[in-house]
Length: 261
Image 1 (cartoon, rainbow, N blue to C red):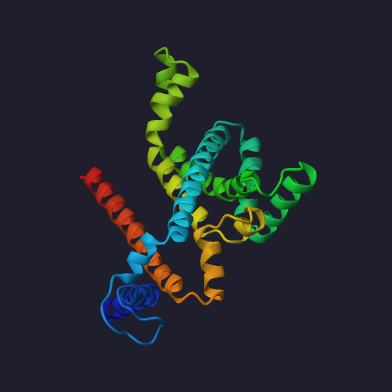
Image 2 (image 1 turned 180 degrees about the vertical axis):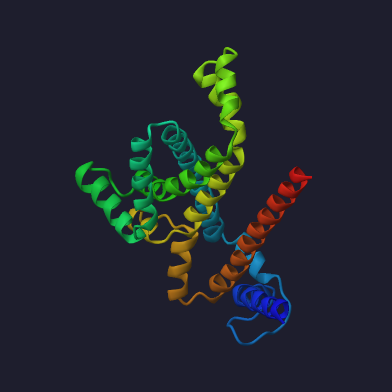
């Protein structure tokens, strides 16, 4: 009975999490214009998604921004984690505490802060992408730090010391010994940063140029409008994002199992 109850609970949670997404995926392959009425099978939503210049420009801009922010956040988060890990205990504790504040802080506070800092104090015009990149980097970097730090704690530290004893400089030992051992954490942090950038709404809203939209800001504005074709095309976009995320998770788990064998 215990195992049966456990299986029931697991399936209930899975259905609760994935049923809405599955319904959305089904509707993305129909010509329905509203939720509740399924008509004929159609790929028109996907055709509209990839043939509408406005949507294509928005998608390309969003992923370009996400990759750029992820690269910058990965570099800052990785170097910060390595620096904190090899610092003294008191310094490491202060850095870890400072890193936790942006994680629990509300995005709207970060968005307002970056907007005020860049526009009022540094006189940076909002028409540039500088406030947006800085704001999203401030959001993503702490999560990269949290992804890399556990890998540093798990690695064999004697290898780094052995590399120094065998003639490696500090930077050479860092590149050839430390970094290869924390690559999974770096990749995980990079993918987390991309996800956070794609999903962010509040920081993007307060820091982006007026003529630029990411997926999150575009979806919110589109749902307030009356363009039915655009709304249904966003169902297709949501489906593609979910499929790509699911494929990444499956590939990552497959790689881990292969390495374990």
